[in-house]
Image (cartoon, rainbow, N blue to C red; front, side):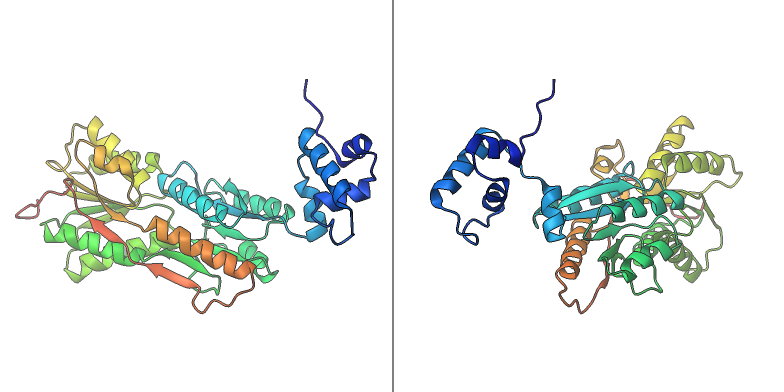
Length: 341
């Protein structure tokens, strides 16, 4: 049987003092209303004895503050976004706030519904990785005065604040490394095609190849999922002219690639080279550690949260759209070949 939560009325009945007096003491206003030390002590001891827990809802009604912000990401199953969520939650806790973490499942309608429900909870700010290029619902919240920060995915032509990685630069230099190692038949398995990071990664991939006059490449896929990586790799391995290298545009896609390669008895990098966008600790524990483009997750999280609370406090931010430099980590998954195979 659940014990009923102690209320101010219960403390009033125990102490013989009015609920108004008790409310003023427990909300820190005893001095303001000249409540005697004896009454204060009596109330505080009774509250402690009865395990009284203050109602944040009631406090919110008085102050208009909830000390709550929201984080809405496309998928908690994606290791990159799970890392982002963990980092951001830890940063927000330092400000004495709590975070409502939600997942749009890469679905724009779910995102729209989640935004509506989060706004109804009177959140004081929002950090979001949009799941599509449809920005109206997010921009409306920003225009209403809600502090909104985009992370990872953002809208290039809007004035919404964002913190992300230079996705073009990361993909460009990763592709250049493959070319430097003799690869000219390269396949790119992309994610959600309309998302800004994906578009910029694909552009970096294509530009690196075309600068080197390489035309023998392909771009396939449509989702940042293991299933997408698996199916597209299966299809690539059925081609007469198989690629010598695959560039997976997320570590979830790369996981699917590795599963398909194992089923087809293809070894990395002996039979095919593989590099992925995004780092994860598991990449170092594979039989062949996977080369990757790493995003500065910690820095993205810290800057996004700093921006958010500057906006909550109405502080001026000189620059509120930031792209951070990625790093290419070369491991054992890329084979150097003398001639294009």
